Image (cartoon, rainbow, N blue to C red; front, side, top):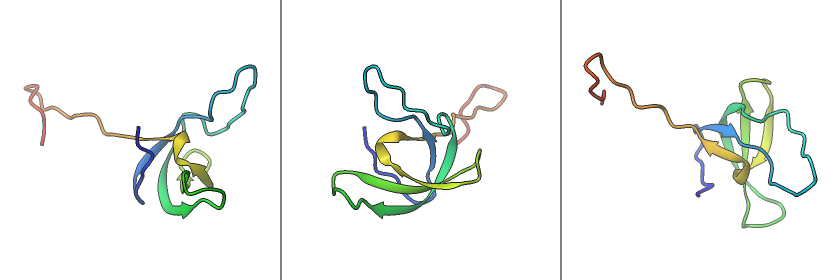
Length: 85
């Protein structure tokens, strides 16, 4: 899986990393947003951090790439069932 996103990418928040017997509350689970800036992590070069505008909350947060998935549009078809280019 690649965590490399570009400014303008539509993303979905997939939640925090799993830890046994511990619940990470998150208000953004399942929310969609748009990447507005790529950031450099202050802790490590291995983690990519992005500034994301969330449509649901109208807030901007900084999120690690491992907590995001890119949203890909569904293939569109016409009335004959042929894919629209």
